[in-house]
Every structure is written in structure tokens, then in C-alpha cells.
Image 1 (cartoon, one colour):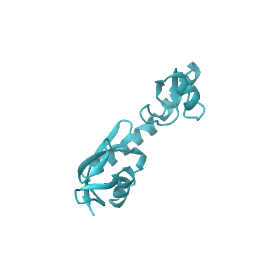
Image 2: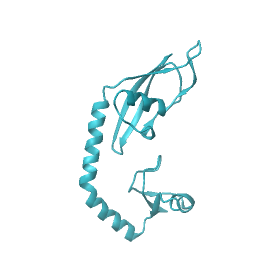
Image 3: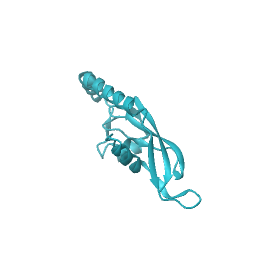
Image 4: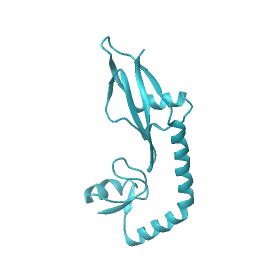
Length: 147
């Protein structure tokens, strides 16, 4: 079943993308929660008109995301965590702690756009990806140290 997304959905697509999903997922979750609509010919025509009118705004949003990515390019974060004597962290470092460290560095980044591929459970150096725009992503190196 083809649907038009009304908001960004992780591992599926971005707002205004036309995607193919299984009919149960579309009819039972995406459409009732308002996250998508069925991609009928009239809905596709409306989407094309909306995208044409929003092209200028989207270009500005992308330019802002690229400027933010350029300013984040040389940022290196240090995150303190309570550790055992062997260097294993009690718990793990997550997107919330990275967002707080970025906040202290002067960048207001939403924690929902921060992606850490593997769980961080030991002291060391890692990278996190910030998905600033659907075409702009930046990798931020961070170091986990013992407090």
C-alpha cells in the first residue's frame, strides 16, 4: 500500500515522502494516528502543489542545517560517567547525555535526531550521528571518561 507521510518516521521516511508499507501497518497504525494518508491520485496532486510552494522554505531549512553542520564539524565532546575499576560504565551513555553536552557547548540540538549505533558501555572514544535534515547528517566524536 502506498502512503504519504505527514511527519518524519525513523527507519521509514521523512515528511511528504511517498513510501510503500504493508497494508496492516498503514491502516492500523500510520493512518489512524495521523502520521500518514493514503497516496490517492488527488492526494499526490495536492502533495506536488504543496512541495512546489514550499521549495523556497525547504531550501532555507537545508541551508540552515548545512551551516549548523559546518559549525559542529570540529566539536569534540567529553562525557563523564560513573565507572567500575575495570572501566565499565554503570548504565550507558545515551542521546540525552550527548544532547546535554552539546547544550553546554552552546548548541541546542534535539535528542531525537541523535543516533548512536552501538551501546556505549565502556570508557573510550565513540561517534554519534546527528540527522539535521534528510540530506544533512554530521558525525560528532565524543569521549567517555571516568568521573
